[in-house]
Image 1 (spheres, rainbow, N blue to C red):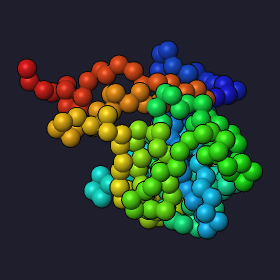
Image 2 (image 1 turned 180 degrees about the vertical axis):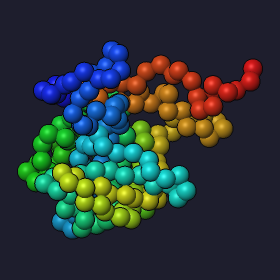
Image 3 (image 1 turned 30 degrees about the vertical axis):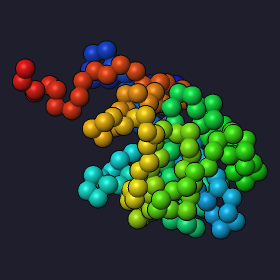
Length: 199
């Protein structure tokens, strides 16, 4: 991320005011798979993605209109969010810098297409978590359009599910993105509600 050229002193000690910018971090680095009427799938790596509703389960992704996947999303109204682990960082980065107009990204990365249960877009088998989605709404924001989608199915790697059916995300070696760099998520510091839990 570029350093702000108009930093000013903040009213708070030890703080500097920056221009408004996309400094929220870390954010997930996800690989979104799509497919169009030609039948050739595509993968776009996106860091602007997140959960927006729990009931019904929904998420959002933001995509520039100039990206090849943008047209595929509008054409089909569906996609899969594939969450990579640390072993897939190089493939994730490649899918973010080359265009699906010119390259078959599954071929270029050696990634494997798998079947989705509820959408036509393929899952990426190597990714430990695959979230199938159907678009409910598109909002044009400026440089990006926000696609809000309902989660229609989730596939997870068997080794991430314990005998009680709990998802063991701590074993997935998931990846975060911050200011142009990829990071492996590390040490667990707590769990939801631990601050008020009685011993």
